[in-house]
Image 1 (tube, rainbow, N blue to C red):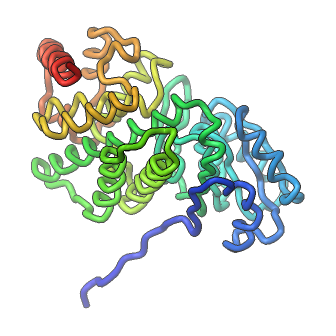
Image 2 (image 1 turned 180 degrees about the vertical axis):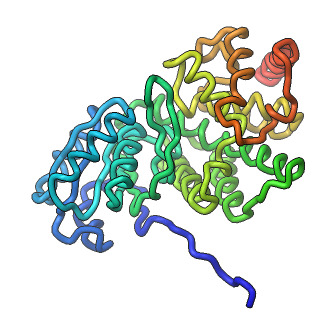
Length: 355
């Protein structure tokens, strides 16, 4: 008998709107996640603490834990604290680092996790991946996808604009990641999941083609939904493949060689644009350049404070960050000299496009 359907793990509840956080207790109860509010609320040092105070009156049985740093040690420490008593769920409130720590600790304790995002910096708000730092190096760890995802546009709006804009770069990078996945299918016969690809691509296309900016609620909602769609795409595939290719290899390489250079989303967008140029897809290159420039995101190494030599070093190092992944970088296998020549051509193309 043919397989006619498949089971896909997705959040039970997704809510993107203004005022969503005020309804957190009701969301937990209505979704049968926690009827009595016996949850561990995990907050970061920023807006998370403010939101915790907002929801505390309606979640009187909750315990609040503050985490910082986005490290594996912080996640393990939180996991130890979660053994103190029985919880219905872990509620992570804050930016990407806080949510990743909460996701990892909840998974290790076998607890469902609710993601309450206060920024839109990357697709970690709904993904089955936690990016955590250990020994100064950021690694990716498989975790359970959040059981609910809440994005309150009021808190996104009051957060740092640069963090939110970075999410645009992460979403746009899906286009390059999917091209790398298709390349791996052609060259190496790698399995390709059309459903995961369509979710990843749809979010990226929506962001690229939307005329609004971060001051426009409709654009911010589209960005939030695109980041969530990216997380679902990864959950369907079981890996980060639908949203991570050469773009993220470059991002991880910069993080390893030149830590603190720029955010995940900023570097992913820059890496995606360079990989798209390497691929020779001039139509996509023009679309992505226009989008990144319009949203004041980096398009050349100097925009993130990298010299040409440093960027060349990062591109050379990039394949080592994901040894099992085949992308345009592995396909071309450029020497340092070839990389430097292609980067010069790329910089000329950016100047021509931007006038």
